[in-house]
Amino acid sequence: MMKKMWLLIGVCWMAGWFLQACEEEDCALTTVAYGSFMFVDEAGKQVALADTLSVTAPLYTSDTLYVYEGAYDTLTSLYPIDTLTADKGYHLVLQVTREEELILNRKTGATGLEVPFSYTATTDTFFLRYSAQVRDTLWVTHENLPYFTSMDCGTVMHYKLTDVKSTHHLIDSVEIVNKDVTNNLKTNVKIYFSVAR
Amino acid sequence: MSKSTFLWLVSCLCLFCMPANGQEKKFAKKETVPTDTIPLFQGFAVSTDLVGPGAYLFGSDFMSAEVALEVNLKNRFFPVVEIGYGKTDATNEDSELHYRTSAPYFRVGMDYNVQYKKRLPGYIFAGVRLGYTNFTYDVEGPSLKDPVWGGEAPFAFADVSGNALWGELLAGVKVTVCKNLMMGWSLRYKMRISVSDHPNSAPWYIPGFGANNNTKFGVAYNLIYRIPWKGR
Image (tube, rainbow over all chains, first blue to last red; front, side, top):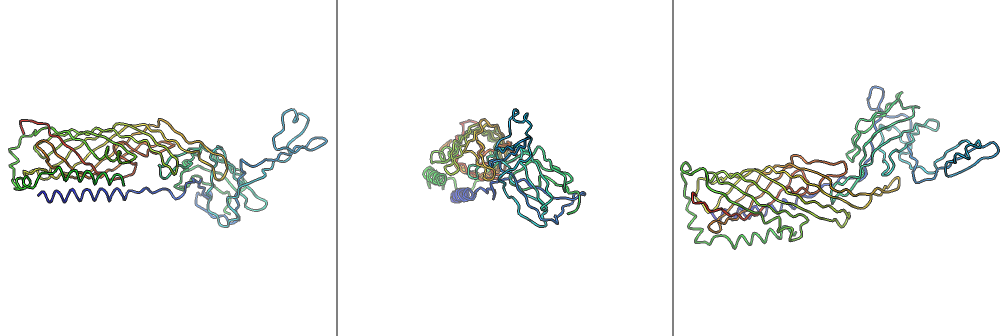
């Protein structure tokens, strides 16, 4: 009987050692959480855009150029003009973001989008260009949630969507279907297009 | 590595503490006990686990110390309460993340002597446990640098509260070493039932459970003292 007990003790020890060695952690493949947008028609069915689609986003670190026109001259500034200058009759004629991040370049048959959000800003802007003449703008408002996964897998930025708005050139409406943006790539927002493109 | 080294050492310790061969032969007779005549209450025993503190001494990030009180009912059922304290204060050199927590934990359950019909110097047992802990933890690390938009977000959260409930299935062996002293191994399969989540973190270490995985295995090496009781 004691031999059997010794055998059991040995097996327990070996099993414990082996099984603990097997407990390795599976980290997510990506440490960036992307917002996932699905393109749908009026009926809510996923559609592919016939047009090419390019998506850009103005970078917050880039410079914005403001051009103001007055009665006698034109002012160009990296900052909005103050009230005193505005009272002299200057008005904004051009506001150009000088640098944009290219997220999607002339993709055909796009059925959706995956876009990164800012770690520090709470509203991100995306320009959807279907052709040279038509452009929709998408504004996504979110809470930023720095998230600790584990000591080995590290940290990642998660988000909670609070609002999504858009212009309505080709977009009919937008709807948040899953407000939690994590690295599991579930659809967060449905973009309803007014016509099947 | 350090934990397995420790396990090896305690198994050697077990080797030296086991009964001598002569004593083994004395117990080797498979004497069947008439179970109907065994009184219900067979006494108390207290025990402690050596793997938790030992592994910590040998370099593990986790430390747990626990004591257990069990009741022997008919030498067959052993209801048990385990109370322990788990802590970690770890820094990952690669990620520079620092995680700190310490809290008590509790388990209740029962062991079942599968050899209760035989009079032996020890027995093989199977058991179940239900564990619970309520804890707070601090986690901090380098700021998150935004690879696309630029800028960075600080990362430090203190006194994040959490709780966890889990179940355990265990099997092992206990052997009498001296008159009232026993030693035993058990292998524990731990299943997480619920763990509170926080918008900014998931607990990395759960006192009494260990690293926060859905399931995990654990090993316990127990020193058990049977409280002398004249009725046994």
